[in-house]
Image (tube, rainbow, N blue to C red):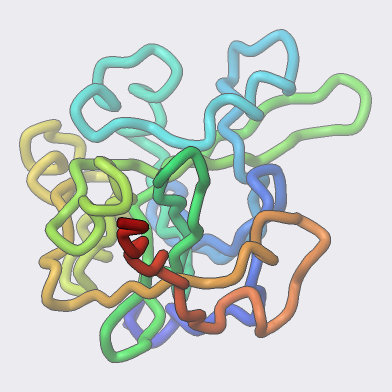
Length: 214
């Protein structure tokens, strides 16, 4: 069962260009692999394009030239136990950790591609799919990654399933009641920080009301 393969990751911080653990569809079977996060289309002239293609929108992924072929044939599960988002308030960005209420691992809906590097060989890369934010994420950001229900894993990975409407039915916000979020330290803002403190909850100081002078 795929639900038994999706296990907790040990990393607390992930840079956009790092390699991420995925479950991928290929022909008639699935495999586990480490893919570069930052999608490099097969037709790209420069792999640096992947730095700008970490996400694909659920509403356009089936038609956008960079993603439409992978959407039909190369879908994957990107395994995680949480993610970070930043809330903009008073000119500052406060990071939040977002995960499952029961702290279980989960899987983002993703796409993968293999780009032929003429010098160093093939590069396998991926992007996660985003959708509208649910009620728990919306106060922080207006979009969120598509988190698939375990019952949808097999269909998402099945290369024989190619109907756009059928696949789009899976690309919806996870119900908010299954998730939790809390503020974390700005330690997570720096890639070199990779420790439990990055995911530890913090208390946000709120300014006290000013007293009237007269």
